[in-house]
Amino acid sequence: MTVIRGATTIPCDSAEEIKKAVKELLEQIESRNGLKRDEIVSLVFSSTSDIHSYYPAKAAREAGFASCSLFSAQEPDIDGGLPLCIRAMLFVGKNLAPSHVYLRGARVLRKDLADKINIAIDGPAGSGKSTVAKALARDFNILYLDTGAMYRACALKALEAGVDTEDEAAIVDLMKDVKLDVVYEDGVQKTLLDGRDVSEDIRKPPVSMAASAVSKLPSVRMHMTEKQREIAGRMSCVLDGRDIGTFVLPEADFKFYLTASPRVRAKRRFDELTAKGYQVDPDELLTEIIRRDEQDSTRSLAPLKRADDAVEIDTSDLTAEEVLALVKQKIGEKI
Ligand code: DC
Image (tube, rainbow, N blue to C red; front, side):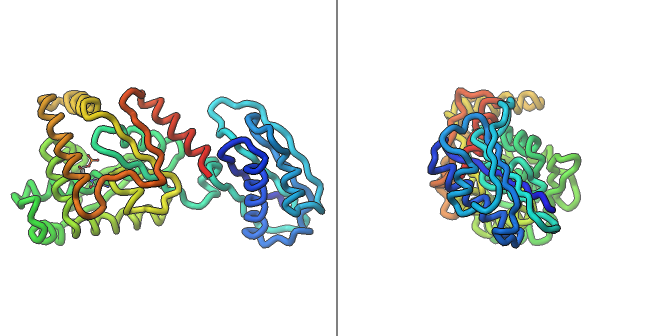
């Protein structure tokens, strides 16, 4: 006897969605475990208490899983639990190494079992991307990749070497001999230039505008994109940037686009920088944010843009906790 676990989510409580999700889940469990239908002895379902429209067991019978015994039950309400979730347990009459199957929003429940998950969070400077990305990565126990840090490292190198950040040939030349690494220590991303930890230096105010300038250069972009795709191809991660959902990972599982008014974003940057001890002028920061938005969204290759299938969230009047809760809710609801 083998027991196989599975779970999935539905976008809304309707009989049609329940039937579709149950059929998809069972067919996936069957094919990933190489099961014949008559090898399934029993099928037990539980669903969250926000599901009322249909019994998953009935949906299973109608999907052709009729020869085994079927049972559905409702789960208690658990604070913070994934909403609209259906869980399944299959008892199989032979011994095998089971492949458990977690689909749709339920993939976040078992990162250890599910395929790799990539979450793309794009948006302009100060929209709250990195705060939510870090918190998501922590809560889901997956990697956080700050792609802006990679452009910032390239810009820092150019500034230190006195190379014009608009001069593509010179920047390419400079980057040829530079080793840019992104490493993780205790879950925190560190950016290394030739082995030197530049994680703090790349946050200095002059680097922001320079990063935006080098990020316009197609050869720099392609180089960074390749690195980002390589990391995201290997492991589950949350990536924040400008072009993750549109260009780097158009197939990302979950996509978000955060916005906020320029004034709110400039204020956030001001608070962040003054807390680190930098002397900054709030009006200059606002001007810089507007210039950077313009530069990032008008470049020819992979500009700052919302992907058509990204969930847009205006964070102007939301706390970081509210943004995180909203993002998690959308992940849970996603088909
Ligand atoms: O997110 P940030 O402020 O650290 O990014 C610095 C600059 O890098 C930003 O103005 C544009 C560029 N960037 C980009 O073009 N694409 C990304 N995926 C991330 C950052």
